[in-house]
Every structure is written in C-alpha cells, then in structure tokens.
Picture 1 (cartoon, rainbow, N blue to C red):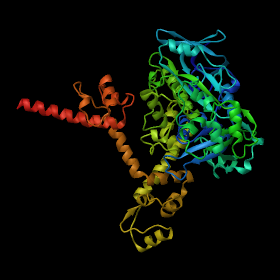
Picture 2 (tube, rainbow, N blue to C red; picture 1 turned 90 degrees about the vertical axis):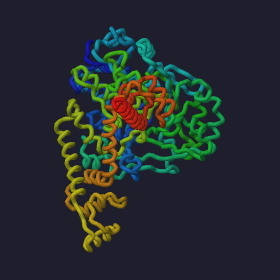
Picture 3 (cartoon, rainbow, N blue to C red; picture 1 turned 135 degrees about the vertical axis):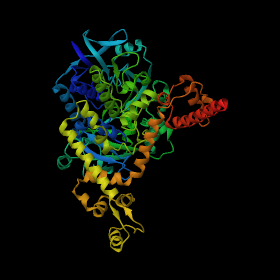
Picture 4 (cartoon, rainbow, N blue to C red; picture 1 turned 180 degrees about the vertical axis):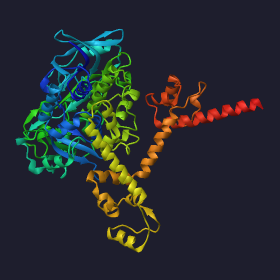
Length: 633
C-alpha cells in the first residue's frame, strides 16, 4: 500500500504523469474510478490543432505518450495553416476515440512499476505541511512520498442540460466531492470554471451528400518523431470529415430559447472558455453572422457515430433536437447523446511553483484542468511535467523547468503559475514570443536531450534526433557558404526556374529567403542537398528563409537573460517610470522585487515592461554615479 508516487485521475494528464513516473523508476499507483475510461477523450474525437499540435510534438520529444497513441488511433491527419508560415502551422488528427482509450489503458496496465486501482480519492494525508498519501472511498489508505492530482472536471462537478442539473464529473460518472474539500482545507485558493461538449449523432441518419467533404492530407505526417515517416505514410488509412453550417432558422431556434439556457439564466456560475464558446454564446455574441461552421467528425474508424463540433451546448434536449434538425443534411439526425455543460472546481495555478508542485504542500503536484486549463493537449503536457518533476524530486535532482524560449510547454506553465487565469486557459501560437524558434518540426531537436537525460528517450532514438539536427545544420551551413555571381550562366539558370536575376554576388541562403523559393528550387540551386530526406530539406529551407529573424529572436533571448540578472535598487521609484501602466506599477510596488528576474515572475508583468524597467534602472544608476562623483569633486 506504499508507493513513491500516487497519481489521482486517469485522464490525459494522469496517463502521462503515471507513465513518466513509472518509466523513470518510481513505484507508481494510478487511482482512477473506471479502468475502461483511462485515457478517454471526453469531448471531441481529435488531438492537436493550432498550438496544440506543438504541445503534442513537445510531449513526444520529451518521451511522453500522446503522439504515439494518436498515430496508432488516428483516422485522419491534417496540417492546419499549411499556406502560412511554419511557426503557426499546426498538426491535427481525428482519432478513433474507442481505440485511443483502449491503447492508453493497455499502456497503463502493462507498464512495469505501475499499478492501477479502481477507486475514488477522497482526501489527502498531510503531516507537517507535506503530503504522505491518499485515502479513498473504500477506506483504503495508500502511502506515497509524492502525489500528483489530475482530476479533470471531477472536483464537485455539476452537469447542466437545460433546467436539469445533476452531480457528475463526466457523462455517466460521479463527481469527486471529498477531494475538493480536502484541497480547500489545505488553504489552496480555488475557483469555479465551466466547459461543455456537443451532441453525438448516429452517422447513418446524416445526409453527407449535401455537406462539404473534408479529407486528410494526401501525404499524412505522424505526430511522433519516434515513428517511421515513410512506413506511416504508406500504411495509414484515413476517412473523411464533413462541414455543415448553421442558418437563420438555427439561430432563431437558439435565440428564442435563451431563457432556457443555463448559461444565461444564472444557473451556471463558472466562467467558460472564451475561445471555444457554446453555440448559444456564439449566437448571442455574433448575431450579425449569417452562419457558423459545424465540423461533422467521425468518432471511430467505422463511423457509426459523429461529433457535431461547433455546437457545444447546454440547452434542453428538445431545443437541441430542433437546432440540429434545422441544419442541412441533419434533418433526420438521431441524437445518441445530448450536449451538456459542466461546472467544476479548480485551483488557482499561482499556488504552484514552475515544477507544478504546490507552494503550500510539499510533495503535492497538480496537472491539467485542476490548474484552470482546457484541452487534452494542455493537460497531457502538464501531466508529463508533473510526473517528471515528482520523480526528479525523489531522486534529489533539480526540477525540469522549460523556458519560454525553449518550448510551448514552458510558455503554458509560466503563464499559469505567474499570471493565473480567470477562464479556461487555451494555448495559442500568439502566446509564445519566440514562436519562430518553437516550430513543431524542431520539437525533437529542442527537447529530446532532456528526455534522454531523464531516461524517457532511448539512446537509439536520441542518436536519430542528433543525426537529424546534424543534417539540418550541415544543410543550413551549406546555404550560407555557397555563393553565386551574376554571370550569364547563373542568370540564365535563375530564369529557367522562374526567379529574378541578381546584380551582385549573393549567398544561397539569401536566394532561398525569397518568398518564391521552395524545396525543388533549393535543390536545383544547391544539388548537394539532394541527398537529404524531404522532411530534412523542409527544415533546411525554413532555416534559410528565416535565418535573419531567428538570429534576431536569439539575440533578444540573450538580451532578456542578461536583463534578468539586473538588481533593482531598493530606493527605486516605480511611479517615476513613464510607459508602465498603473496596474503594473502597483504590482511592482506591492511585491518590491529585488531583481528583474523576480519582477518577471509577477503575474501580468510583460517582457516589454521588463525592458522598460531595465532602461530606467540604468538611468537611475547613472544619476546616482554622477551624484557621487559630484560630491567627491
């Protein structure tokens, strides 16, 4: 009954946390209500997306499991924002949600050092401010040196369907009441959030012929760097999704039933996700829109049931039927499960260190929706980091804390623990200041060394990553060192590939940086590159195109690192700084940070504010030096 680490909750955060702990050598226990729901995709049947795809690639690069399971269970793969810059593209996969859950559960049940019990955690055992274990609903007590809570939406969960309210952590499952009270008794600041899900419809009752077909990429790319790309592309079978639209009739049905919507009647108190609103919230906020997209997504490879993405709702069942039947192609749709909203408790993430350990209770780590986030990917990323850091702590090693310039995971955790959140936090590429350095395809070369050091990435995989990095760097170097002169032969060559002529000596890198240059042209320009695989050439092309911008961002990072070591004088008057908002000045005065590093950790203090602060500190110090010199004279 004694373990090194106990993980509470078998969602995406719990799967990553328990697997990482066990694989790093910790004797681990996963407590989950139902074994068959371990790794369940409670909402949409998809993994990844804009910025979320970055998180999955980073989880994989560190040795996590989400990318591998997605590749195995995936039924459609697409790169979103394909026509835009490489920094904002995002991989997304439709998954067979039944298969995904089975794979995740089997990974848990077959991993050495990892036990699973089907119980409910009721309370924490805490002595002298340190966690010692967990008590369950079966009156069992499990001892542990570290505890990771990944409770999802189960803390005092309440489900809303129209006027009906019922206690539950997820459809068909009970909520966790005792654990929430236990956390409150520890003195942790807690709040209430809301999320929701869409109706599921019987696929055979949908007329797909009147909808827009949406196929996956012709050449699908795997999420996991550990999978063979060519083998994946040859063997992966895909099925289509479809796009439908709401219409004026749909909007009228919804609008005429606002008075029955828990979101508007005051029945729901928790704050919902701003960037993934319910359909009733969309109609309320964007009534000027003629229509809204609906993505009809198959939930399994057999496509017996579809998820109506874009129609998240807590409206009553009769209203859900009317609005779904108003959509072209779904006039005769049979609803298998109605959409619902769910309210649940969360812990203010500012209660956490960057390691995801709570500040008040030693050895207690939190990950996933309990920290105020939304989404499978955000949860899995936190679960992985919490599991890694719990085990590193047991090994008397420093925690793994990723910087904002190293990973989207670093941005995610830093945002949470320094700024907190008042609504479900979702990752976006715009949240990352250095997103050009944090491209999806560079996740393995950025992060695999950490995964290798802690034992989650094998020697063989790490060698492959190092070879990839070496090839990219060699190719990029070749572009820099290869020059061309404006002679007749070369100008003729440029014309043959549809490029404008040059008037001065120019490097291959400068030419590749042109918007019109693609991989085919690059290889014709520098034939020595033809020996590399297409995905290596893609990275070499990106390095060439964005070399100047990458160099600039790298300089900014070094400058910021230098700033963070600067001390703030004790007599410094923050009010004297022009360019800082009143709110930032009040926070600086309240916390009175000793260094720029400490100032950067304060919620709401932006990188721009740090730079302004640094300039005024230098001015302040120069004035003091001048004053001292004047007195000496």
